[in-house]
Image (cartoon, rainbow, N blue to C red; front, side):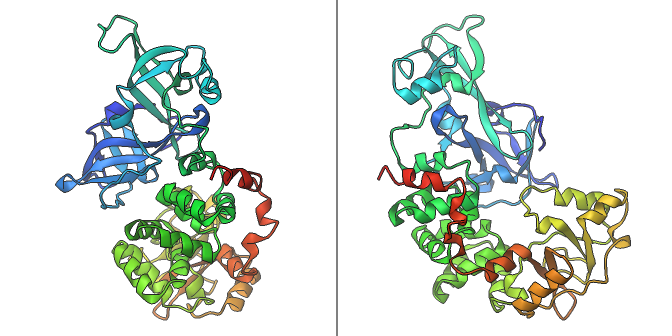
Length: 448
């Protein structure tokens, strides 16, 4: 999906087929899940409720939707088949927002009135019926928001007259708002939504354990996974322990494999095995491999999900892969060229191609023709000091890890190395707490 995607009215998605990249139908869209936000801000679209075989309804995050086109939704093909369970912070558009009686302020005063609780808020304006809402993708981002409301003027049940149905901005309609006077977990989640994961982690770290658990429970899986990766080990263990086991497994799946392995390594063996058994087999297999290595070695530091392409892939293919906004800069810096299979552990590792080389060659150039074979890879038992020296010597921000058979096992990135070189309490220093989150911490815990 790219900026400029046409606006999509949610009612038009009801019953639409969802397909994987191969064109096979995976299910039918039954609803859209959004999170309401304070201050009249448009709701964020979290994902879709999709009905799959057996009439089971599952949650499909918008991060796994690659296209919303006429009469169809295209997905990455990666689905979590656990049954969808609505959370306190989530609202179903078709089930809860449509046919709702709300108030419309043509002058756009809804947000201010709702915030102040005056006569210009919920009690002002014209009462209308919500017929539909539209969602649009934010420019240069993968996020979607509800931006427009299709309303019908007149009392409920009145005969419709020409011109009485119209589309208005979300901010001009009141009656959907979160109650701003409360400081529940839902409001904290909405308030901190714009924070970077590291800054939100800093907020959580300074909350009381009770409040920390409430906010963590209200975050969606992907957001909580990103935040957990930025928290100290003891906070990670505490939060994971408060989640239901199936939810904990979902969050571990959403984490980078190396971070999930580091977290599981802090748990007793029986808890590790129980959570690994609940994870998808493919995700669990990668984490198990990482747990088998010593922590301060290349194998213990690496991620098992670098970008891997075959030698007959082109520069254009490689550039398309590194454009993925979900990749960290370190992982997007280079492509690892291997014989099939493409998933780690791969077939024979052939070499790597740095993204700067990709920018210098024509799009049709085969990776096999420009692969760098001179740089020796790391062995999985390479100790942390040697890994650090390797990255510094060759000015690398990530390096391949290859086993004795020549298969690529993963890649060590400079950020993972730094995590193990810095003091254990580096996340709690004044420098780390001086970001945008620092000023909001005291207010966050005010409403207990």
